[in-house]
Length: 262
Image 1 (cartoon, one colour):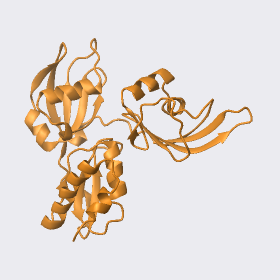
Image 2 (cartoon, one colour; image 1 turned 180 degrees about the horizontal axis):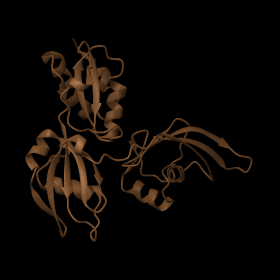
Image 3 (tube, helix red, strand yellow; image 1 turned 45 degrees about the horizontal axis):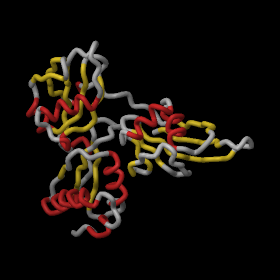
Image 4 (cartoon, one colour; image 1 turned 180 degrees about the vertical axis):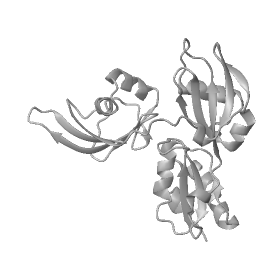
């Protein structure tokens, strides 16, 4: 069995990353064993889905700990192996980064930095979300969870403790259903449409764009004034995605836009 490497790598902006993932796929084929990748970003996962689509020799399973996770691991399996999901050992666990943040609010990236300080690797960590003012929970590899379980640390002035959790013990983020949104805007600028679709102010969207948190069709977009078209996908980190379903011009020279929030 051979994978079409050059076809998979052709014109990909993630050529280096795909080359690494091809090694995992080849191991699954040669050793006849389920082989897991590290945690991957949402845009790289989308690229893998596109590039590995319709391959006969390999099956892919994506797992991030909960249905709407942005960062996920990929399990590569030979195509003749039965995709029996419950029987596959998923090497993912949870972490509770516990502390009293009532008077010292922290963000997801603050907790991610704490995990790095405890020698967790970036590709060992999946999604992170806040647990009110009591800290945060995170998805990570089994190896990462075992290595930092019961460790203590400090995030600014707040003392924290790390506890490994099984996935069924975690407070999984709310799984927001898909929703069709209709909006009328003065232009088709990405900041205006993202503001309407995600329910955030234009200023917050602009800040997120400048911080590198927004992608258009999975390519980084740093232009708030960028125009969008039918079929485009807007992805905002930790907020999900918007699919542009339709754009019509109104009699008053405005734009009626139909979005699918995912």
